[in-house]
Length: 237
Image 1: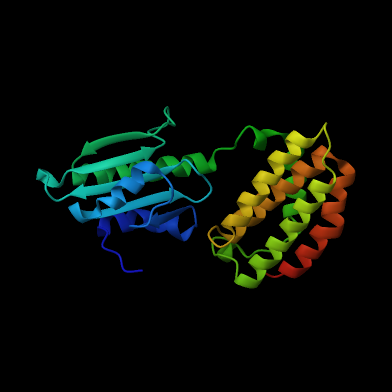
Image 2: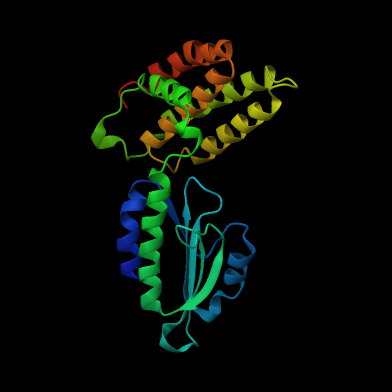
């Protein structure tokens, strides 16, 4: 895709793009009202771009430069705002300051990505996830690369089997937690062509760990029958 973005923006974003943590959106934005309004009026602006966090639906940085304004003034919409505020903020700033704000935002997103969630702090889930993750071989120099299409397909089929198994075992007592696991599973399926090999396996391992904690019998079925086959198909990534 041909880009008209400033080189400073691309330099900052390069590392995070390579790791599959963010994606750059130009002109065609997803269903967020403030961004759609940007696109409708795009003839008025020198350039418009958006950066979205790959594994989040509510972390983004959108900016546009109005040619009619002095000093290359930018309108920026950003979420999270800073380390203390996860809400959306919209403001005006200079083009130069916007670049620095983008750098700060990328650093903040990286911190979010490296900070364990409350769920990750569960020692049982950590142990189960690590046990499943250890079944896969991934070269350190390749872990930030994307899976090839055939292996993405194998993971997708594995997750489809997991979804069916969860649905078959849903009842009044477990429907809430199973619904949450199913939702997370579908999210991973939508990210297979975007996130890195390592990130895919980490997320799949966490899903398996949550299932195993919910039900040892169900977890063993996922690990022994489905997981072993997946590991065999992905061996030597």
